[in-house]
Length: 417
Ligand code: HAM
Image 1 (tube, helix red, strand yellow):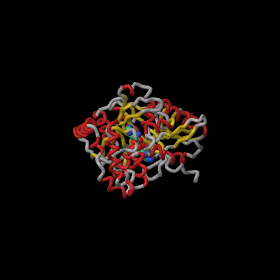
Image 2 (tube, rainbow, N blue to C red):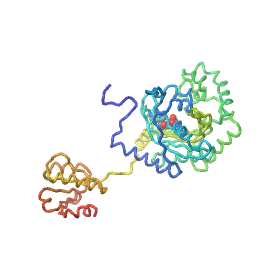
Image 3 (cartoon, rainbow, N blue to C red):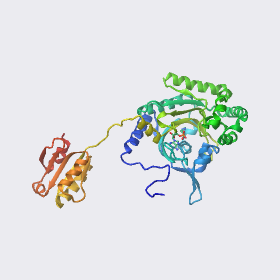
Image 4 (cartoon, protein in one colour):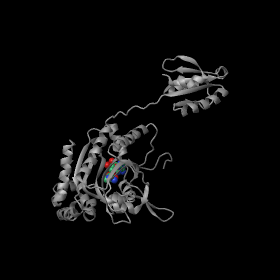
């Protein structure tokens, strides 16, 4: 272990990278507000049951990836592997479970103990939305179209939208029966993971990437054929509405998603700029029951991985809006001037100006060198002579012109031009 490195799968994010994060965060605030979403902040850890019950005991996330621990009070807690479950727990206190439409979004770190790789981290960040309380193809489509608009505003081009349906609760048993019957003839030659999925979570066989599993999966029945007419119509309506909106998509009958709470519409956004981990966002409609309640809460939402959005923006060479603030530099000749300038710097900042000042004792030459290294537009210079005359020297760094200003005029002089 090198003490300078953070744990595997985590990263430090330095100030020069932060504008990229701010751009995504501010775009999320702006775009989601247009659709009536408000930000929600829930705890980074929850009772483990919250995730086990909603994401599903047999999912890879719950079985293999959760960071769980017992706290000093003997509580079983887990660092959130995703945002939806905790948000649903929080919304149980509201009217959302009774059908009041509630629109929320969130931003923040999530934790999954996956094998680290490019774009696959153990602490990663999601920006997600949940539209809770109502069930309709219109809600699903609006959610998808908001995601597409969000990506456009992030200047991400070339993304691909995949959609599918998991059907409703009553479609599960017939679909699983059909998959079991079909895969039972092939399972002995399929990968160890699929053998496990065959008994625990047969849907996940459909999105296995193992080479030996591709042939049987290609010829597997389409689960939609076993859904009720109502579920088929629900999906057809989503397809029709997406077409009406001019949104391009592909129906991918292998798309099942890795979390068990999904019902009806599921979707994913992929991008070739990512390489192996090609999903930049995923979501769908869900029904979730949180611990202590048998009542389901219904919603539709998505989450995008912020690291992956940044990777795609980098691959596309997306230029960020330039935000390079100009500074005023306050230079001092002598100790008395330095003390007075220390106060002046604070006053200017409190008036909303960006101000830099050398806090160590440095020569005028060294101070000017420091000014020229930063984005300084004006320098204020003061020594004992200027203090005695109650003036300050203002140097415009663009024109090089230096002028003497009565001290009382300083704010006006800095604000003009
Ligand atoms: P998810 O597909 O598990 O869905 O994650 C959403 C996105 O988070 C992925 O598409 C990916 O961009 C990013 N992501 C996931 N795992 C990692 C990782 N280890 N490293 C980096 N990025 C990662 C959900 O989490 C659902 N809660 C989405 C949702 C909201 N469904 C309905 N509402």
